Length: 260
Image (tube, rainbow, N blue to C red):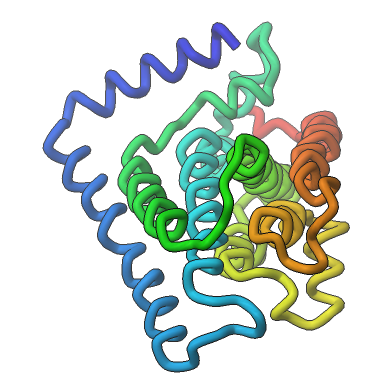
């Protein structure tokens, strides 16, 4: 992890060399996602409820998923742009260094401008928390933290899987965006509003349901969600990164050098 933080320090210094550009891009990342939140607001303004969920309950889910995505997109950007390393043959250099390829790619690129999107999500979270009639205690606060961390692991795992495909496809394939951007858009709503097969797939295969739906049932004291096991469900989501790392290692073993 010392090497990872060294990468972090170097890249933040390099990006801050152009401080005006950094500030403007961060402002853009802060303002643009508000259009998505505005769509959420007008949806509830028109229909009032979405199944048994009201606006502030969904806003809580929305903010947590967007916080997770923004942190993952910032810290795992190396995997999101990994295809460029393969295309230019630069992954060969990664292989000859005496460090983990996973760590090197993870630390190869950071998008610190995502702090704007993160700040927007924190504001939405604050609005939701202040307007929900929930009896807050330490376990519910801990659940929100677990939800956020679990979401980071899941989105990072999806970025890793998408990067692994580049060992065979060379170029990144757009279908991966179904699970990154599409996963973010879908999981900003509680999963039980979708068809049952969608809910099951995104609970047991890609465990977004363990980040938004199940722990929300615990936090909001919904009838189905009285079990403390729902509070711990984000831990299952964190395990998603483990098979993703094994898939990555499998892909590395089957990488064919460009010879450059």
